[in-house]
Length: 349
Image 1 (tube, rainbow, N blue to C red):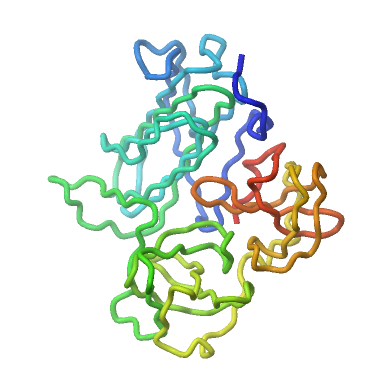
Image 2 (tube, rainbow, N blue to C red):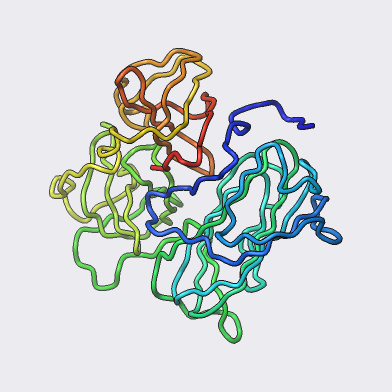
């Protein structure tokens, strides 16, 4: 019997639909996985059930388990495979309820083998061309059981490995490259803060991409004034592009010289139905964009069922939800909302 109180995670469907990330285009899940399941939370002893996962790690067992011989609570699993990679840097994205460890070529790159709600972990790993061994260890304590692993190639260049004989290089998610040497265009320099968030849109509630360290400079391509207090600036950070608040950026050109630019958030108000709904647990302001600094366009009553069509994520948790209500499309704050339906089909913006 499950022991946690029932909340939105109970309603995730049995098939875990691929997580859609707006800033990565081509997800890979690998093939030829071997899955071993243990009737304890510590991967001890002999597996009680073994199966193949030919299409990757993408499971949601809900309140159940992978097999009747595996308990619904307090079990663990080990997924292993050998995959072929081109040379480059890859971002590994793992979503789990509860915990995981990700091991690549015997190097532990994510260590979150703990009980917790549904959480997304990311890490960037530089790999040489050829085959690499990938192991994902999974922990289920109580309530919903779900796990997914994907990766994306984010750069085609692998830096020199500090390990004898080569090997992988692990970059914690949030470590960017500085401006391209020789660049002579407009620059924005992080100032007055040790780290500045780069986001998918010019809003405090947009999804987190990476952290820009203090006193680093980046090409600045455009600006946006949707929040109305500070300009946000569109930056190139290595192979990525994103938005950072002008509150902590110093420009080497007058800000008026930069063109005004919209974002992905201006293009998604007509997003299709995703077979998911949101139910506010309070009267909610419906905002034009995912920020309390944008206009209120309506209100959603307590307990009202609304169509959920998008979301933003910060620190692995939903931050804002894009909903459709009475012909209006806007954003409500996620912490005060119960979600039902196919949450993994709802794109992260």
